[in-house]
Image (tube, rainbow, N blue to C red; front, top):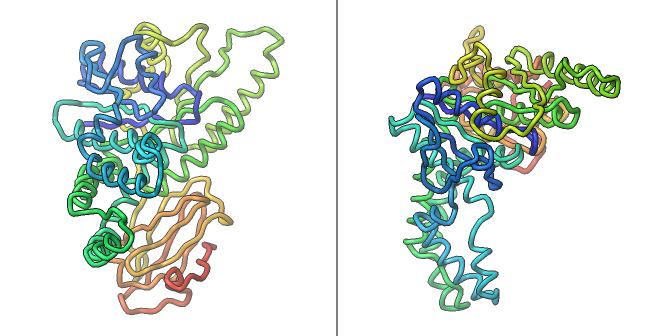
Length: 411
């Protein structure tokens, strides 16, 4: 079973690429379902058929779905929403505004994660294709399972204990609506829906992310950052789709400079993202809408490749023995030393790249070992751990996070 996630900057053609890939998989006899986590929901337009909140067969072996956030909230978010409505109304917020505020933006994307896992575990599908939102929303979506796990493991139990002590006092003194067990139960149920999603999406044998780019400087720059951040959270990118390349058939001198720039950007894509395979798609002469157009696009894109295959193997994180110690390697392609910060807190390695931060839970073999050194070379962060659990290294990354001090940068 394979899960294929397509993402990229808005307007680069990721919906077209996802729709065409799903159709090609189905045409090859694979039971395929394609989902949209993009609030814009363009899958219906790509296929020229109506899609809704429940899977609809749109071609032999191919099913499609566009999620309805309201339906998901009625299942899991109802108790939490009711309590939030009471709080907002207690604060003087008008009823209509309170109802809107009680719905967190992006819930449709969040609930789509649980649908991905449900379909992957059902045994009914060979391929699950996901048309993701533009890159910023996708990064927030894919970082959610780890962040939510951290919150539920550390904050949720403590919050529940504090609530039992403080809530009766607040309710009597201020009249503030306080959450009951049903609210905490809904929060726990919400977490349970996402339990195991991260394991699925970071399983490189089952799940791959494919970046869709156009030969434009800003688009390529954003794709590079996306590749770095996806790797930070352990997601495997197995291919880059270079879309809307000017075809060789265009010989008009007016396009000469444009073609030269496309060739320059394509070279930077091939060199910068190596060794990932670069799948090429030429600029179409007409809109890519409908089954025939999508089949032609997929044929040119994949050629002899099987779209459901793992197009590039690898592991975003590895632990290997090094001398008497161990070395943890995390792939961070395109990361800059100046934007990379490291810290250590108990059994977690804190990694920040730009605006994104990950608390990496260390394997059992490393939790009691001191960090001796860290370096960033050739797109790989290497962290060296002492050879014995109690052996102090010469250059430890101190536990500074708890004291509010700055974190150490990799060399």
